[in-house]
Image (tube, rainbow, N blue to C red; front, side, top):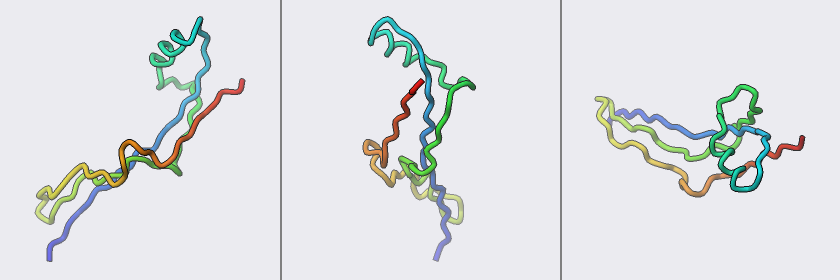
Length: 89
């Protein structure tokens, strides 16, 4: 019998909420793509109850030999839940 070690991970979404003005939809999309998403003034809502992309980061044996890595346990293109934040200012 051998002893193994497994490291698990899961992504947890952090949602931010910004308001801005734009001349039209195309400009709004361009601005939204380029917003500094690390701004301190952004409201953040962390979806702790909705982890996505659960995976085995690494599986090693007792001699630290890699058995496998990056094994996804959930489908990548089917998140468990969706959450939207709407700014109602």
